[in-house]
Amino acid sequence: MNSFTIRREAEADIPAIRKLTSRAFEDKPYSRQREAEIVERLRDTDALTFSFMAVKGASLVGHIAAAAVGMSDGTQNWFHIGPISVAPERQGEGIGSLLMQRALDELREMGAAGAVSVGDPAFLERFEFVEAPDLGIPLIDPQYFRARPLVGDTVPTGTVKYHAAFLG
Image (cartoon, rainbow, N blue to C red):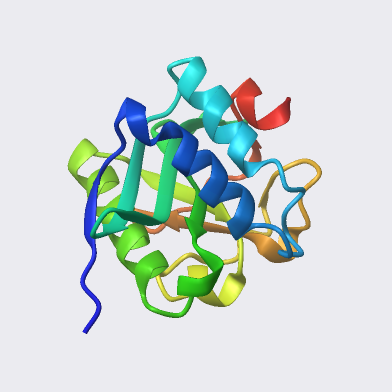
């Protein structure tokens, strides 16, 4: 059985995270291949809420990040989870699922109200992310956008306000 360790990133991990993230999104229809840049801009502006890595031995096999977002309806304490990166040759081994579960656990521990994410709808729905027709993100195809309340069951309405790192 495959066993992975999930840990917080360290400064020395940054080049490997950049490379992994770029590789992980090469052919994804919901990607504009800017995920590695987004993570770096969030990190550089101290807007990265957390960054976890999945490692097997000395090899980086997965990564997940999260950052706070605002909501145009004034809802507070929501976060964007992603990008979620898994080495292409390791996809299908449960690494992304372990990372997503760790991210959701971390947000719950922080007292977050909810999370949004962009990606494969089937993957996100396994973690109770739901379609959010009354909540959107400019320039993102709504079929890839999902939201997950962590407190209660209400999804905000309006537009998600992202940190400038996502927009650059």
